[in-house]
Image (cartoon, rainbow, N blue to C red; front, side, top):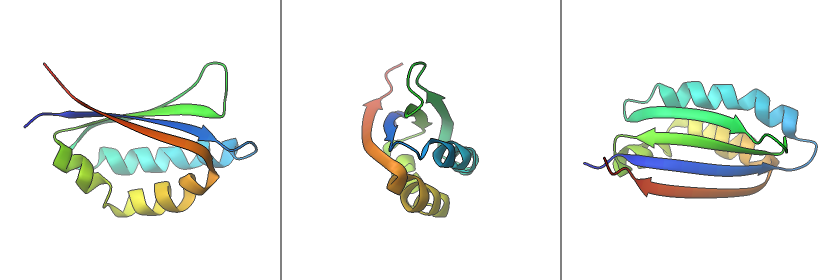
Length: 97
């Protein structure tokens, strides 16, 4: 199986930065506990605190699909973070070694 690299680019709606950055460590901890997760990290943009990326790596496309069905993804990302965002773009890449 081919590993999957995911880049999630998020723009936080103005005024929601503190709330989102407080929630991210909980999402990261949950994702890192998944058996199919190889890496999950958040990186704020250097020049704009409303922008950050999540760099996620999974053992397979199926592992990413399983991630999106977890309780922490549904509760934290979809239920709490997503409503605080102005924009969200998800990119997926096969990992070629």
